[in-house]
Length: 215
Length: 366
Image (tube, rainbow over all chains, first blue to last red; front, side, top):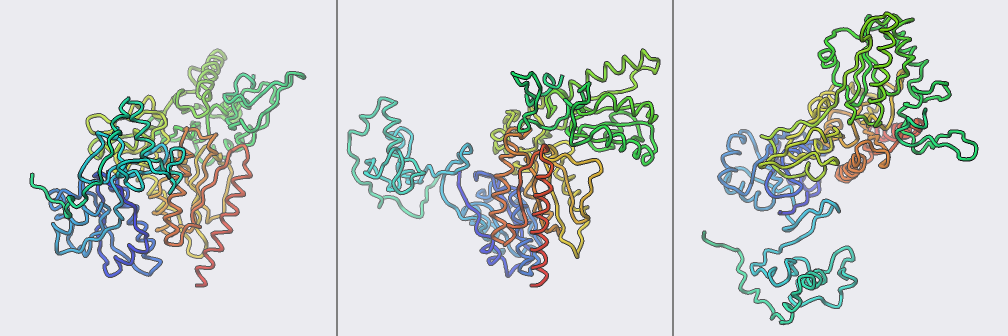
């Protein structure tokens, strides 16, 4: 899932200050907790309250989309709802904001979220952790299904480093040392020998930004 | 009798003296012991015989009816639905936290000196009873009383008992299969089936946690519907000159007294569990002119729906954090109170009221 965090309300209010009629668009897609209709309505109420304190009366409408990143769905769903709308505030990740911008170029679309990472919600612990760095050269097959690129602070290919302490990372004792997890996992699988080979530094030069593939 | 009837093992026997004593920390104030004590040796802080009798005397005049309906708050629907359920149109309502607290003597008093012709009792389904045994004990008492009354020549089924419970309603078409309800349901009643949430209603205990957490408004709770609570909030009178205070109160955390009156600027909306307190309703209330909102929940160990109180606290803390970004965090307060200490709630309310009144007067000066 793509993990986002809501921007401070002050920042959103600043961004929206030149506009009155705004459509708040949720996304039922892959964020967790989903930033759908409930989040859209909640944000609308907060902005109205915050706006009032700044003597600003917004005219807010709310909607939600199954997947904001689907340009066809987004265009067809939003088209019917934008009459009189001066700006759109998106609750989706950066991709959703850009998709709306692309399909509705005449209306400015703004993000209400900071897009953080690809991660998982660990509901038992009320935390969300990064799990995949979208590095383009997946090594999960070697590391027992645990990604050191995303989950090690240094993205080490050969770990752990000396900062691994009782299974935790020295930069933050709340975070697990990914390499500690990898080794314990491989031990359990009886595949510790997979780490015998020292992996050479990666050629990050091969990763081309912006990414583009033809399907 | 009280020793064996208490569902919470709060009544203990002293092994040396053989005397019974109450472990107050365990008591949930269901009053099953009170209503069953043959020696009238137990006092109760809510709904004692005298106040109930007084209520009935006054209510008989007020409602001009000789049918009495006693409802458990846990499963009581709207009055219109009560009418449908029992097929009656005019009645004296008496709403109590658990019908198990009503002493049989009160029913006899209502029938004879007071002249009530028929009594209807709406209890929770037995496995839905918040006090475990309240509903089943009431069932047995009513059966015995009816036999007694019939034998004495007063006719059949003078007291009519029905059971009810309030549960979740799911709309497949709105579900986005996020799985929140499946994870958070304390009773494992929710499952995802072919891309939509379905509920095993036998397991649902109507806490409303899933409804509050559903991102797509695909779930609702009988009697505690999203729209009904919104309507209650928008109907509240909001005074311009006074600080308006709303209390969203878990109905098991504080038992309202029969003759309870608050200041005109304090409004109370009861909730089936603090888990049903929806941040959206809180924001709606603020936007409509409510100045301060107090959430009254049960202490976590007393929560009648497992994780309800814990989740409610978490949700209120998160909302306060967001409200702090627009300077409104003081306007929301979460407190845990238990009915065995009625003063605790009054004290919380008093302090909160003072705080909100100060905050409002500052606002006026600015």
